[in-house]
Each structure stands twice: as structure tokens, then as C-alpha cells.
Image 1 (spheres, rainbow, N blue to C red):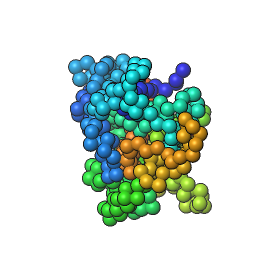
Image 2: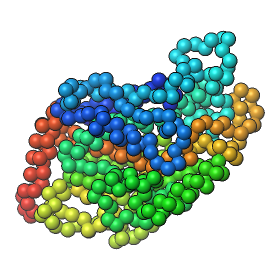
Image 3: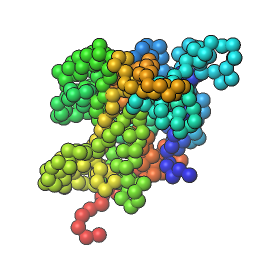
Image 4: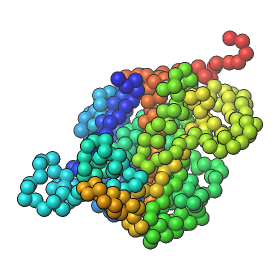
Length: 405
């Protein structure tokens, strides 16, 4: 049984009728409107230079099924549906009914040439299937639209406590942007103005040129994105058990995004190359720092987490996305699952680069973990109760005092 206070599940296939999102644990009394709070996040996920033709077909909107009445959450599970507009072109291939024996087999759009780097082969072996479409439809990153819908609600809840979450792209392929100094306060407003969600305009242009070259060559590109959460109080998470450490929970959530192969918090791997004197963050007294107990850090190499617990500094999480596994040219060697003969891997309509979109998904996953940690720490069946508990904790931090107790 899950111990998470806020939990979610998704269902649906890439070319099925739609995606379903089920979100539990949101307290009652949160003002929530799909067009204002959820649909804009879905639109952000669909953007970014390097996306494929699918994004020209879909125009994602979330249809609310349960959990809200008269514009406010009820405390019961929220369920949402995102209908796939492309479903009309896949009704035969993705039908729930047994196939018509007289149907042209090509109409079922089978795929028997698994793509290296994809779930195709491991999935058919695990589930005893032969047609990789039985695997790839669910393994597709299309599923992340449902995650973003859930994450949008989590972001809405966190905003009530003054917590903001944004993201930007640090690199695409071998093109890296300069470190932003400082990170903009309205991070998404700035990042969303770039086709690749970069904060460095010159690097952004080079990123788009790299994507263009990859497209011409029939290749794909990955990259690194960064998610930043501000306004968090000290004390979320725990040091006492491995599965309650917030850095572990965040790493698992971000790593679960399709094609993510690495996660960093703060300095991450760079910290392993430095001496401790250039890694750890000096502690400074500052009474005005109400969300961090009157202490601040002169730097933030820890990325806002120490011992699995938030410090009150901005939370910094990065995800490394591998290149998408569908190659339009120079397809990698594979094996035909029908005959066992060597052949080139299959192609499927795909993106050249989806790092900007992955950053938005990263925001959603970070938001869901942080909302869970907030409910774990402060509890409350209603938003008003949660807010009272939260404000009482901030008052405790402000008046805690120092020296003997």
C-alpha cells in the first residue's frame, strides 16, 4: 500500500482513444479550473523546437470527470481525460475488438522490428507478445500528457503556499548554454519565450541549428534540463528512512520520465570532482529568512537539499535525456521478430528533439513529489487547514530563537 499522501496513476495508449489521469490526496477547497490551471501546462508540453508532426494534430485539453464541484476540489480523487484527436486514424489498429479475419493485416499497423534504445524488445519478451505495438503504445512519451495534467494540479496547490516551479534547458546535444546568473524570478515566462526553452539566446540559436542538422541526417538529439522550485520551507522530506529522503523521491520521479537516463541535485556529478571546501554551502545567520529558520546558505551547491531534507534554498534538479530511439535514416541493426532474420529497426512518427517538452514534464514530476512532501509534513483535509498548519510552522521558524532551549 502506498504511503504517499498525494498519488497519481495514468492509463491509455499513444494512439488509443485517450489518456486518463487519476490524482488522489488533493485537499478540499482548492480553486481549480481546467482552462486556467491545467490546459496551459498541456500546451507547454506540446511545444519546443524539434517536435514531430503529432503535435500539429493534437491540441491537448483536459476534461474533468470527478473531484471538483463549483470550481473547488472536494477532497475526493480527481479524474481527468485527455482525448487523442488522432484516434480517428487508428480506430482499426487500436480497436478493443478481435480483428476481422478479412481485414488487411497492414491496417492493424503491426511492428516487428524493435528499435534499439526503446522498450520494444524487452517489452515483447517480458509480456510474451510478438507485435511491438502492444508495447510501444504504452511506452510512448505521449503518456506524459496525463502526468502533466496531474502535475498542474500539484503546482496549483503549491502556489497557495508561495511555492513556484519552473524549468529551462541547459543543453541540447553538445551545445550548452551559459549558466544563468541569476535565474529569472519568473523562470517559465522567460524560458517559454525561447523555442528551445533556453535562457541563453545565442546558445538557443545554436541548439536549433543542431536540431536542424540532426533532422537533415535523420538523427535525433537529447540534452539536459533543469527544474527549479522556490519558496520551499526548510524541513520537507526526512533523514530517517531511505524511502522518505526527498532527494531519492525526486530522483526516482524524474528518472521515471521516458528517455531520462540521469538525474542530478545541485552540483550533482560536478561535486564529485571538487574538494569539499568548494562543494558545501556555508551557513549564515539571517533573521529575515523566515522559510529557512533564520539561516541562509552563501551558495547552493546542495541544490536546496541536505540529508534528504529541504534547506529553504531553491531546489535544483536536472534530468539528462537520451536521444529519441526512432531514427529516420541510418537505422540501427535489429532482428525481425517473425523470422529471426537481421534487419534495420522500424521507424515510427517521432520527434527529432523533445528536451524542451521533457523539461515541462520534469516540472510536473517535481511538483507531484513536493506536493506529497507538503501534505506529509503539514497534513489537512482542506486547503484552509493545510494553510493554518503551514503558517503555524513558519511562525515557529521565525520565533525559534538560538542558543539554549
